Image 1: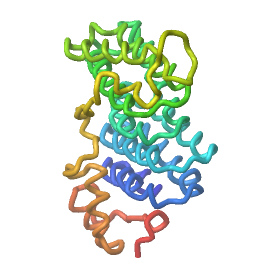
Image 2 (image 1 turned 180 degrees about the horizontal axis):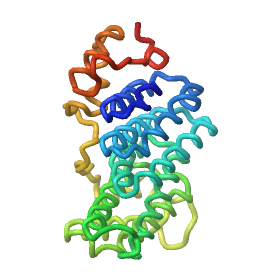
Image 3 (image 1 turned 180 degrees about the vertical axis):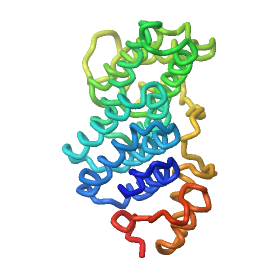
Image 4 (image 1 turned 120 degrees about the vertical axis):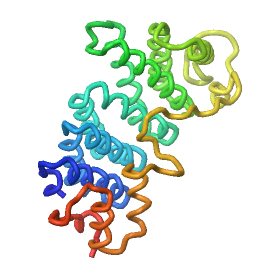
Length: 283
């Protein structure tokens, strides 16, 4: 797929990112580390926003389905860091939108990484004008952080360091509460109060504690908030989204049909090769 990545036109590069996301669940860990992650790292710094966003969505697929082997996890998180550095604000928003919903299934290492990146973003936002974000971007980032923390809250915290990271992120966002609307401020205040006392068995002082499994339900179960990002995977995926192509590709038989799918979406022209057999085994 490096032929597509090297194209001067954005269409083939976008096709490569979408193919990578669709192929990710079926790849071996060796293929992921040696082929897919270098490809996504390159696409993540693409100047075309659609290509960068699609590569982030592909990395998020790995975040949700990759095994727990330490070396592979570290390689994935390093790639995500590269994408954040290259993509700036738009990459931060896209990553929060696609990774936070997977938090309930994330490994401890993944969740700790996500919370740490949230804390870094919020710390930078506190500097306001020197953060590199416009006032509109600051408001957007605060709202995205709020939604992400609501979704991360669904994770059953069983490790003290994760509880501490989560509580610190809530407090950091509360410090930027002027960027949120009133309903979000009220909900955030309730979340902060809800997580002030560490779950039973994780240390901390104070009075009687609830069982760990009831800590995040002190105010009753919270329904997941709808995502505002267009990259969110839905039951009715939009054309040209990673979910759409994963669905459509599952019905393709062979290289010709796959090429026709991408040509029909305007991503590839007839003269473009589709070198995907190494990833998908297309005939």
